[in-house]
Image (tube, rainbow, N blue to C red; front, side, top):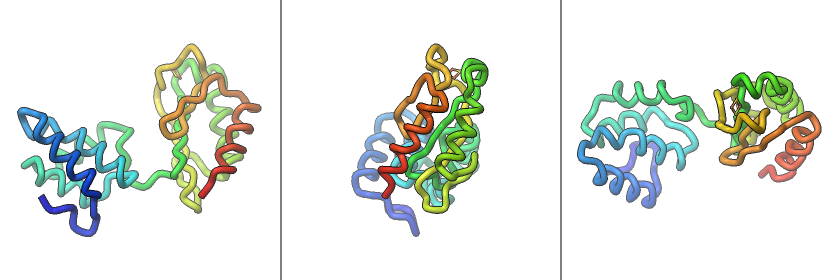
Length: 165
Ligand code: FES
């Protein structure tokens, strides 16, 4: 199948998409993996991707849209190159997760649910990150940071800002 109009996908991603579609007995089942593959390459799910995936799987765009709106890890707008997720569920909230989030915003110059002007950072609240025993917990891209406090948050932000592109 042709790559997305106005949004090229790499040959590698196209090959992965073809392999995933082959893997499932019904095409529909490949919807979520395909969304992950597009997001992996683009950083979010553009409008064209919704239509393209629907066509690829012989579905309607609404079927793909429903999946996107159900799973919070699927993004409809570009996130920062360093995307910070802050757990706001009970253990983390009780142990200072909200203060950590406030500090992250101050240190990174980026508001909650926004992407910094230079595209480097974005911050969002999420539900349990499955490490409640080491609350409060945050994730930067795919890396967990546990037992966060003010001091650790400042040190982490210093590191993150050092490695900006
Ligand atoms: S409550 Fe934060 S990791 Fe579970």
